[in-house]
Length: 118
Image 1: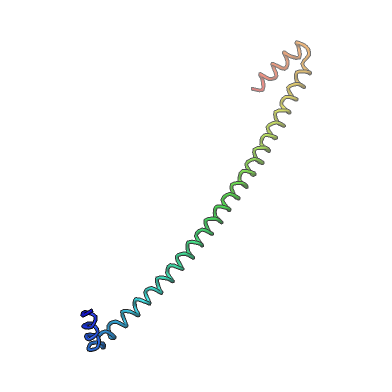
Image 2: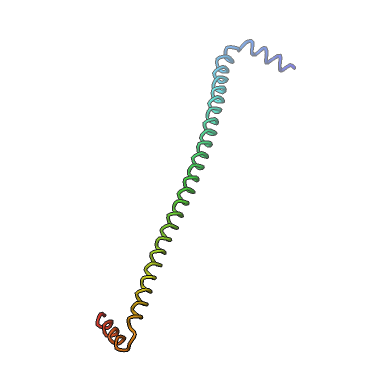
């Protein structure tokens, strides 16, 4: 308790120095805490914004991927349908040609005609 009374005596004599240096230090400490709190609030807000942006980007990516898959499926189906039609036309043409060639003379003429085309 002796040190408390000596400290009190010293403060009575030197209160001007304590007030001159202590108040600005105390004010700057309080200001620093307030700025730190504001900074932390902005950091939390920024993190929330980042999460929102990431969610929107993920949703957009999924939507674009689904759209691309649908487009690929449609294009593949169209190509397959075109191929099937072409194949059917070729088979019909072959059958028709086979039905036209019913004798040996017609077969020989068809072979000669085919050889002359190449």
